[in-house]
Amino acid sequence: MNNRKLQVWLPALFALVMVAGMYLGYRLRENTNTAGSFFRMEKKSPLQEVLDLVRLKYVDPINTDTLGDDAIREMLMHLDPHSVFIPASDLKNTNADLMGNFDGIGVEFQVFSDTVNVMNVLKGGPSDKAGLQAGDKLISADGKPLTKPNIQSEDIRVLLRGPRDSKVVLGIIRGGKEIKATVTRGRIPLPALDAAYMIEPGTGFIRISKFSETTYEEFMQSLEKLQALGMKQLILDLRGNGGGLLNEAIDMADEFLDDNKLIVYTEGNKVPRQDYRARRMGLFEKGDLVLLMDESSASASEVLAGALQDWDRATIVGRRSFGKGLVQEQYQLGDGSALRITVARYYTPLGRSIQKPYDKGVKIYQEEVSERFHNGEVLRTDTAYAVNGKIYNTKSGKKLYGGGGITPDVVVPIDTSLYAPVLSELYVKGTISNFVYNYYLTNKKELDALKGPSDLTGYLNNKALLPLLVDFAKKDSIRVPSLNAVQQNELELRTRNLLARQIWRSEGYFELSNATDPVVQQALKTLHQ
Image (cartoon, rainbow, N blue to C red; front, top):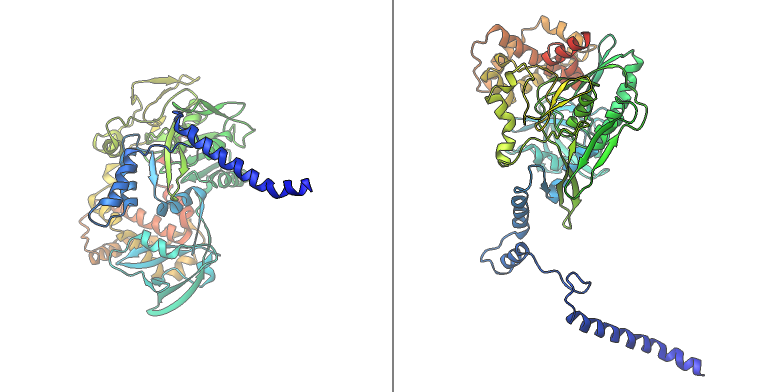
């Protein structure tokens, strides 16, 4: 009987004890000054207080989320040029480039005269399966028009991309007739490797455009393929490679460096030094290696180049790289946005910091590359200068410089005679791309019958491309004045190379353009020596 009474009253006793404990805890909190205790609410920052007051009191309706985003950006402007805030709406596209894929329909498009033209269709991709073709004009997506004046490429991507296995109904103009096509979206790869082929017997060429999650895997597949073809020397092209994931660059460096060699180390005010070393036997530790760089090569590209240069493992050919030596970490925020914040600097094995100065503000920092064109640096052929006056020496006695990018061992200046204003206008306005696209569609049957890029040169020898381009440019309100022989040749080469890209994608483009590229030709000369 006593046990039954206890069972009846036991829940009530537990409840009483709990209430008493909560009351005592509350009274203790009032008499405790411990900052950051469990019960104490953190004091709001002035920024949050202002946003709350605007939300509650401001005279007109206003989006305080936008105000908050702008305030965050302004705050980051006082840190460094590479700490950035990424809104939730942009995060997926921002991460897609690093992931090496996205969900979409698998077409390459370009806007000519406010019309979305399909330039290429990914073989075996969603659009290919739905029957889309190069030359199709996209006019709508799920009933939403794609032909609005001044429509932006990003607006088009938003309508064409979507979750995998979702469907989109496209309105298409083909041969003057309007048709519909339903495309089931799928995973679309974003390759990091633009080209890999034997540029001459015994010498391979690999071009890497970025360091994403798939870069090292793509590189290894190409390296093994070229070695099977007898590659003994390699040209690794990192021009225009703005970087990406540090670990991918470290893994690539490991394929070129032996023993336990230091590749890079990172260190920050709140982050202790961390060394990254070669860990395994590499596939290309002995062959001759030339690495190509220019003012657009940055971040992870500079890590790879710095390691190979410090260890006398590669000869760097080209022009001084961008100069980004800051390490970012990305943190997810509560509203789906993200903060990518600088946490450390990276240093080459010799201790070089490649980061160029940013103490004069973001604007001057961002304009530093264009300043190289104005002050004549890109015309120099010597390397006898140090960006910050500090000189480092490799074991072989070679002098290297820190504090402003990677200075090449062999400099190849820009030939300004090839950059007539009209050539730039033809490129910026997209006139050459539009001409090449239309020329391909007009001669598609003949061009698709060519076996490879080398056949294109012979095919075009009997074609007068330049007069056709000049006439086409007139329709685009561009008058092409008299060009000298060098400029005419350059225009014809650019047109031919873009046509190769239209037919054979990036690999075809580089196979042809490398034959006349002065940086690549210098790399071959360096290897021969």
